[in-house]
Length: 327
Image (cartoon, rainbow, N blue to C red; front, top):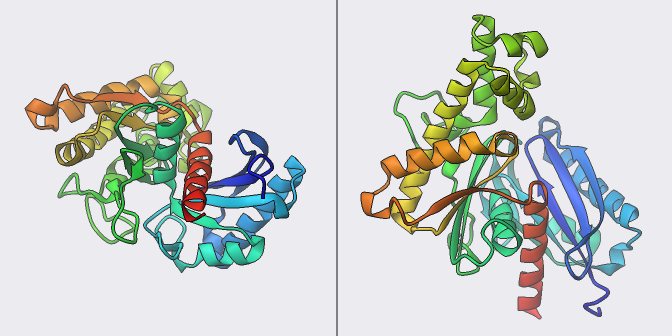
């Protein structure tokens, strides 16, 4: 296929939504489709929804599947990179799903499956907040909390599997039990779901009047934008809960800095997009307080720049890199 005519799919499989984007040879978006993930319906249904989303995105772009040079898909949880298998996506209840094989059979093109935060950090590294940096560490709090690291243009991973599961770093011994089976994981202390649950309790106690007036105590309704509005409206306890979560993220980040020495810490996801100043300020302060003192001024903390585009751009760029490396 002529490289000028090739198209790529960048796909973001999240805990609550999935997004498929068709990109041209310059990795510019020409079509897209978004759906709810519905992880509770199981892996078979989920893969079917991914296929539907890709086909609908292709229709939106008026691109034939035969024009696809490759697909890159960012997925939650650890990934067998060699086989393209989603090993254990806790928030989807998926285990050992051979996504690469299923999508290659369906679309007859190369498929690269990688961790969703790896793809988001790679997108920011190539096109966004960490462009022109040597190394970048990303933390994306949302339904869960994912982490990723790019060093000298390469995504940091194990021999055949993705790693950097920063959401499962232990940050407290007294914490709640995580979906992974461990206690005190960062996800149990600082994910959006944890923040929303704590805010709902505060609203019930009368400590978050704006939340109570606008959405009540239903955790599912306490979204990132609602939290940001409550902070602006003066719900002090809501801000305290958010900063407490950000402090835990900073502790985990400090541990990663001690090991890897990244130039840039990228914070992304819906929570950070809604409240960038709170998260950047709180995470950086916590990281500096908990990192080895000689490292405290050797990194900067920034908000991601690309939003939803980070994962899809990163996944597509990685798929292109892998496909061209094989040619």
